Image (cartoon, rainbow over the protein chains, first blue to last red):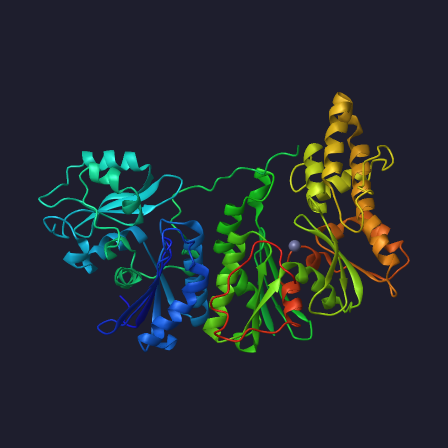
Length: 246
Length: 322
Ligand SMILES: [Zn+2]
């Protein structure tokens, strides 16, 4: 557990989220959420957002002891940008780095959303199981299930229909329904709702990965070796060799 | 003193160069993973850059102090965008953390600026030929160049690699092909050099196809004639390059030539260039292949972007005016 200020970064989705957290003090989150038809803007917005968040929190780099970064799973290029920025800042300022699962931060972020934002019939308690779903493109999603701060289904990559099947077959349903959050839950709402998952309205804050939650989770963990901080890719690259000469 | 990063293709590079052009360090970490795929796989390249980039910077900074740096330079493009982004994000993060200015550099200008490190000063004509690019430039000052010609299809190094693959020599096959060519007759086969392509542009697609057909026509005989095929093929690539160089030199008042890019290591090309009767400069091999010292060299003459104006800087994949 670190006692200095923390900087948080998450670039696992199209959004860019940054946070500054002073333990027992100020908490600031700044983010950029491109619209459904917009391209991600991680490269352009990440570092300006970090500077603005620090300014808003009145925190100097000399007060920062740790950078917490979401390591995915998610978009490869976005993750590499977030991680290479975190690593470079850590190298230049000589501070620690910690990686946090973006799916876990997404699931725990439900705690930060108001009941109104969850906007669900019957107001399910947030202590129920949470299915975190990040759009993996190519018609697939990254997903994991968390309950009472424990992982009850390990992160994996699934076609939405298969995920819905798995979820429907699980026996961890309590009185409250399983809550499905994330850009993948929004995109494949129909499949998940058919499996009985409650998905908040598209505009709910519960669907966004919060860098502040990345800080909260990362604060309690052990720092890692800078060069070992890598994305949780979950997929091998398409190692298709260039076409042979014709 | 400038710390430069270069991650436009598959080599992770960092270098420290003084304002006067003294190379303090020039670290290149090559990725061995691409050989089994017979080419650069962009996603693998990006993954390896991320794994290596901070270590390579540490190595480049050995023996230098961060306080000695007055700017950080980085290749902004052209190249593989996912690969470039790792270098750009790292350079921005390092520069911001030290409140240093950042100097974005065009990769091709880097190849041209490699010559300045050896004291070869403008004006000169510069041929850059590698696996990724082939162009001929007129260099009249330190900040840019005029493109006189460029390849319309494959790069010269790509032509070497593809030819080597057709002859079963592996990847990257350029050096293997040249080695085999030493034992062969360069006049055994006549391969096209795209002499009809007007002006100073290059084209290697027809050459590659001609080799493919020749190998097919020869059938079982091809194996025994491999050295002749390699020698004739290499001869054609070198002649195709030199034909444009000669055309361009004819128009110069003070003809001088510099050669860069990985293909500059080619023995035949060097011999041919030396026989032109004009001053020829070829930087050491480590400055011809992709490296960060050449990026630092180019950066010495460019306007630095002060902190924090570069925080929103992005990489670019395709060619932009240098
Ligand atoms: Zn190059």
